[in-house]
Amino acid sequence: MKYSTRLSDAVHILAFIALYPDCDLTSNKLAESIQTNPAYVRQLMSALRKGGLLVSVKGHPRPSLAREPEKITLLDAYRAVEGNKPLLHQDIHTNPACGVGMNIQLALRDYYQEVQEAAEKHMGEITLQDIITSYHQKLNGK
Image 1: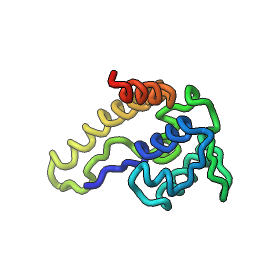
Image 2: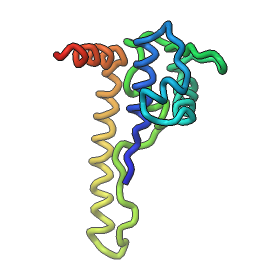
Image 3: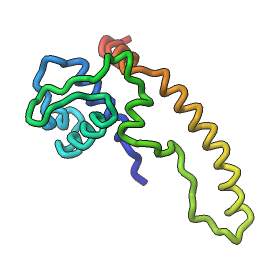
């Protein structure tokens, strides 16, 4: 099963833009940093623009953040690139004739919702500035 890296890559793009605001940042350059293709970067940047986190003009390689890094949360970025997709997913292909197969999913649903709410609350408290500060600490060996 492939896990989505859309959030991680979106935060990578936002952080890169925050760290290098005066540089030409083409989708090619950003893709090189993420080790992906430029079309994927453009797709993420479009989602970030629509989510109100990024300002960019087609043909101009100077994207900028729509808000200060301390006003962009991890939840904002998640919503921009993943929408309302849940973090945890239930197996919907269990045997409905089996008591465990049917009812375990119903029991899990409530707990998964609790986890989702707690994660979203915490993600709403983590800012892009927090991530950039942590990046600088890692860079400096702290």
